[in-house]
Image 1 (cartoon, rainbow, N blue to C red):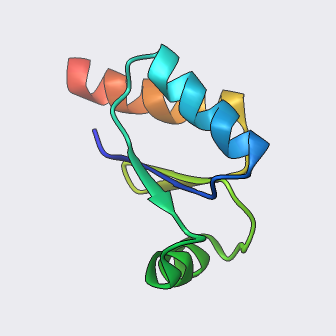
Image 2 (tube, rainbow, N blue to C red):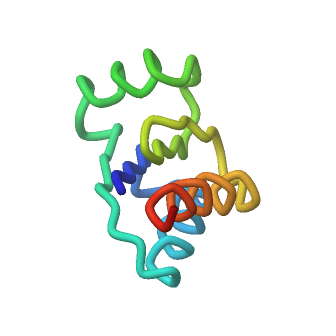
Length: 83
């Protein structure tokens, strides 16, 4: 499973998303778009959004702190692996 979190250090919703993934023991790559302009451009290209957080879970883009969408994306991948 590949999980990326495009975030900034000062974003409270980014912290919520990352804390949630840590609680679930989901490994993720934290990409600081404030410090990496190339990553920021990549995030905008993938999501069409300039706001953070943007999560990419196995190619599925989730914009913002959307716990139910994150759970669905994680569950979909788990179901595919288990099948």
